[in-house]
Image 1 (cartoon, rainbow, N blue to C red):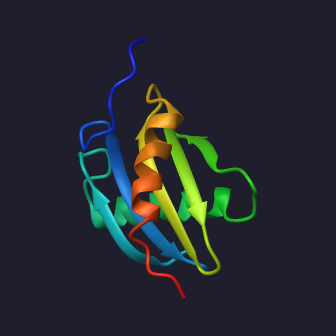
Image 2 (cartoon, rainbow, N blue to C red):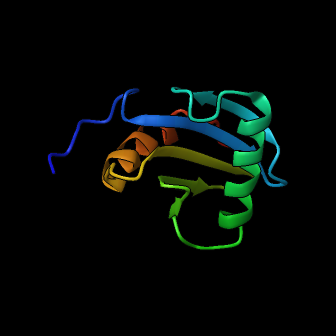
Image 3 (cartoon, rainbow, N blue to C red):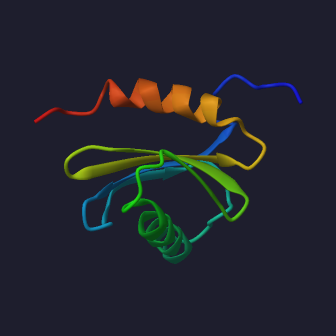
Length: 102
């Protein structure tokens, strides 16, 4: 399988949650979760499965999810199951540079 360069076409969603799992920012790039209700349910499910683990990679519902957490924020990059986590991680590294510190 040929690896694709990270782009908005290989990433399904990017979202940031607070330490209670509440949405601070979200952007979905396809219609996998077309309604706000479905997006919020997905985010809650992802948060519940990742917030108490040390793993930065999760596989959920046929999707690869890269998570990066700080003191009180969780950044998630979601790709399809056949996306390489390195691609999603590369995108996440770019996002990490724009997060406010404090």
